[in-house]
Image (cartoon, rainbow, N blue to C red; front, top):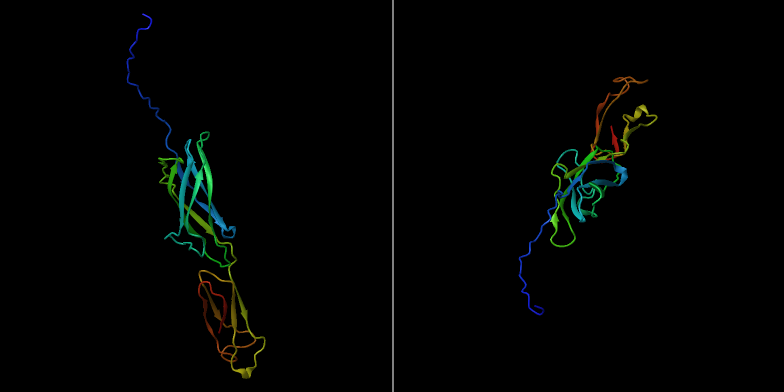
Length: 219
């Protein structure tokens, strides 16, 4: 009848969970080769996989024990840094760039390498943040610095005329430009108008300069 109370029957609510079938995005970094005169090494980091979250990662630039190794701060600026990706739902892979400072010197040297390693990555700006895996096969980039300095040159400087009564003369050899490997040059005297043993005493030997050294040597 109108006005009668109808009891409400409580029913336990079901909670529906929507599983995300998409894999968590993965981070990777690529090797790069740059000229020393460029001043910076620009590396490409790739985020593979779609996500509604932004992604933040950090990295480290450091020397390697492999030869020929670049040194910091002589060849590059070692240290840590970070980069980021915005949310990406429309493409399967996005890229961003990070930079490491390179020192441009005037020393002739071998091409040298150092490493840039992806350390950690997280997605989401709130809490909790979810870790983003780094590809274990592509988490370290090898940066090759190609030397573009001219090799040093040698110049011999000898007196134009020497009096016979002087008894001896000094010959100067000048190294123009430095080399990280050092320089060695063999020398020897040869007859011209003068004859060895009759007019002069023969001489031969080796002149050396240490790594990064310039200047004169004499014999």
